[in-house]
Image (cartoon, rainbow, N blue to C red; front, side, top):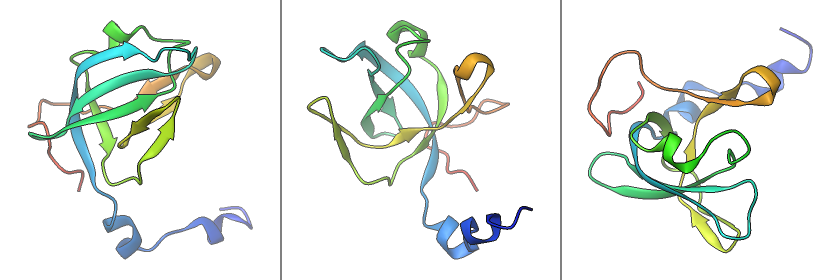
Length: 115
C-alpha cells in the first residue's frame, strides 16, 4: 500500500451503507443531445431506476438490454443532460479505456444485494 492509500480506506460501517444490488437492464436509449450518455432503465428487484451511463462511445443501447449488472442503488440522484440519474452501474476500464460492466458469475435473483 502506498503512502496516500491509507487515507482512502473506509470502515466496514461506511461500506455497509452502500446499497449495491444486481439489476437487469430492461430498456436503453440514447440521450438526445449527448454523445456520451445512454439512458438505461434498470430493474433492481421490482423497482425500476433510470440510470444514465456514459458508455455511448463503446456500446449501443441495445447492447445493454438484458444485461445483469451491478448497481449502486443509494447514490444521490444527479442531473445530467436534463435527466435524473438514480444510481450507478459499476464497471471497470478494460483495454483502450472501454468500460467493462461488473456482473455476476452465476444467475441470481434481480435485486439481490451484494454482501
